[in-house]
Length: 98
Image 1 (tube, rainbow, N blue to C red):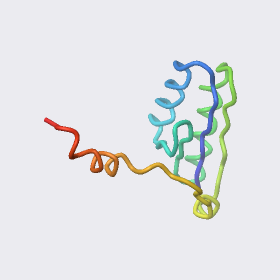
Image 2: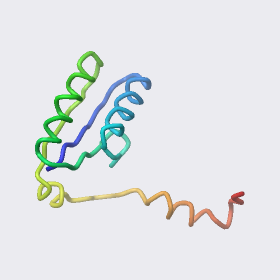
Image 3: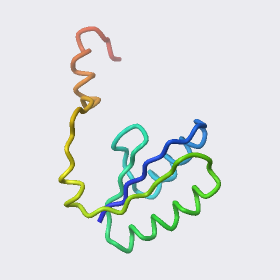
């Protein structure tokens, strides 16, 4: 089972807080403000309960989406940013790393 966190909150400190809190419990970043947690159903329920408490007083739009893995696997990616490693490789001739 999966839980996806998506948010649109105006303050940077709240964005950082949500990101750090979701990553602390095992979530990973998928896009700038979209995160994914993969676990057993009871773990996903625990994450949902925790994030509801954590995000309760934060202004903005904060959503949790419980998903089956098949739903996630069926997504259609229209465009995608290249991975950081690929970006670094493309810049290698212009950047000196030490």
